[in-house]
Length: 531
RNA sequence: GCGCCCGUAGCUCAGAUGGAUAGAGUACUGCCCUCCGAAGGCAGGAGUCGCACGUUCGAAUCGUGUCGGGCGCGCCA
Image 1: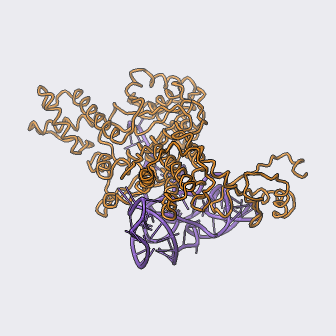
Image 2: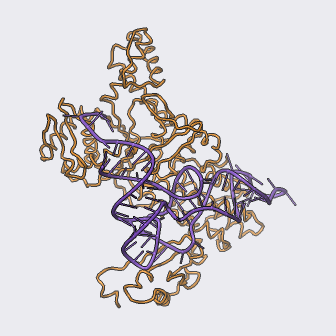
């Protein structure tokens, strides 16, 4: 009665307790209501339990435990239903429909074409691609986009660096640009340029040199991404923002909206009106634009291309641009939500080699490339490694450890579980399809129950990972699922004499194999039948 | 100085909406293949969840402060 006069709605929360002794579901409402009702939590719980109707789905009457939790345990017949659902849905098991076909862009990697992709880009590539796969699995219409800066000072610098190497080769006294790129790959590009441009072996045609270098590096990056099984739908050139006049239009629009002012010969945007900590220069006193203007213009195109949702995956060293871009978008007053786009930042990776930190510097040419990693530890392990940690925690990547202990990489643990099931099925020799309608009532021990619970969690897990933009949750889940399969395998024999028991167990492990496969697919990691 | 992220076992890290004895891997110790692959399993020790205060029936989780680490803060990109 007290609840009926209360204007506040009361929401009953149903938890899934970590401890299996607490049942499949737990309700803590009695604890939360105790104060409002002025009653003891256990008394409230008892009243609730008494009022519940009996159900064939429940193993027994809900229990009151601890300070007043209500623990609910499913009957075995309810618990095993998930197996049939998995076998029926196969690769679609776990998918959701919350995206409802809406468009979302995931922008990631977006490396400038001034050098090979390094470990940081690898983390971004694995994270962004997994996010895209997660969103696709929730029914979003995902477009993967790579934005690259093919103009401006850094590209200029790249051209000059290659030119300097060309001149060295030609025996000319040439000063290497102070901020030039010193990596070996610059020398290689210079060599190739000289080969293919015999008439300009000294690189006098700086435009041609620059174009060649950008094309060469873009090509290398594409090969790296391909080796990583990452593909993009759109490569967006920063230069197109200028050639299409979008940068100018954006600036004009911001001026028109009254969010700018002139000072010291420069044009400023009042980003402080939108939460930035200081106003930002848009047009420098020399008439050129600062980089954040094309950034805003680029995000305007995302919105105007119909992406009402956009996710931008960046290295954490770019986090300073977030507030600015969002502020710029707000100042446009074109209806973009204040939190557009969603940002997912990945923290820096500290690379250790030989017990020492490897400083990654493009300009100095000290590098651990993505290609090195893929060659040394393999694509699957590299992808898994990069997404198994929360992206906003910094991680230490010990190259020696990754190489020497590559067999201990957690990805093999998960893949092995999959291969193990395949191996059992091969020994059985029966037709897997016939397992779909098998009687599952023989499944009763705790290993089977644990496995069933884990399988049933998969759809919600994927939904959570997508909602939280947290790919690492998939890795955590798969590790636990594989652990349960391995424990089960060691504790019980599957290919037993008892035909009914055997078929029930086989159906269960086939369902497990399917979920392992589906989870690995989201990560872009293979599910081998043999290892 | 300002902003963002992080601070959980020796090490690397999980702990979604606050819940019931804080988890995994690794390392270390000891067991388990006449048995579906031991790339596996089982058992053990190891943590005042950086610190303090606060909110709450209840805090690793929320708030404030503080200390420590990373990153970013230029009319650079």
